[in-house]
Length: 447
Image (cartoon, rainbow, N blue to C red):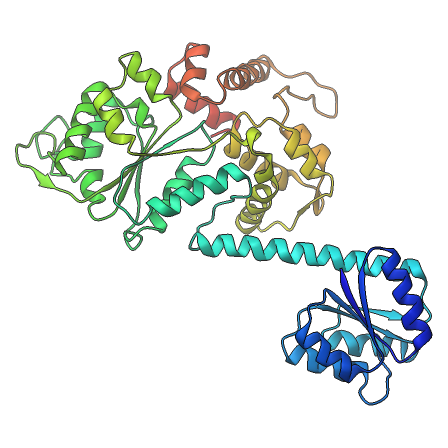
């Protein structure tokens, strides 16, 4: 740190200067507040150690003038007079801290260490605020280099109508990034329209996307606009696009190429202006090789690709993600809780097979179950383990139904880990349909 000492006592200036220089600081000293004020206006300092009582101009007046001039260095006041009253007055004027004379060397060192840590945190906050401003207020955590790269590309593509393909394991935040792109785009004034292609039965999905006319099928009692028409002039997010049936893939390709759609049971075309963002946890190249996904549609979607790494490969994001999630849960539940100091290392060590979604559910359960105002690392570890069921306080073993549920949960978590978080692959490992897996995940709190 570069430190300025302002004190009319030559002995203190010398001894304090020697102490701070030995600790590796760059030290400058002045005996008058007026001279120091002229110096700090032209030279850069990280901290100023200033005596309260000096001739010509006292320390509090120096502090007031320095702050009025926009000075940003941390000012630490020193005085042998006034005690708590002098300290309080100095703090009111904007002093960072107060050292009563006489002080010990370790008191000075501790105060400066705290000042250094505060400056590091202030610099970190300024950098993060700059990132938030650069992303136009988009609520995305991008601490890790990989996520900063993703958001940098998202910022570049957002102003254009280019089709974007967002890939990554389930729960990594693909929809969050897609919504960020929409909010940074010229279409932000209209709501984004989103649909999960894996969550809608195949026989209803075509009508959901493209709409239908009265009498097109049993139950079609009137004309209905589809999501493409709902998203006209806005953005359409097709989540889990890799689960689209082949027949619908052809119709989607035509809609993208022609810029128009045809409702089910109708021959007339409807022109639509839709910016498409597709997201998938599947490896579409493999799906193309296996004949489950059209190659021409893949190339039509893969115009601009953003890949989001799983949470286990970007642990730098976990701390801020956890803080953001905790704040949202507190707003929803009204609970007033905070993390214990040892929570972050535990969160960073966990592999998070369910990615951000699992982190969200883990923190929400911890908030709801917290008995005090602090969430301990032990509580989080218990909530995010492999799912083995605990006995109750009486030592009672679970019922057959509970044992089966616990075994199912362990099998699902193991399949997700083996599949790298890919839910479609996990469903195949478990020999169940994807919709059955989604239902089970919702039941155990991973969806």
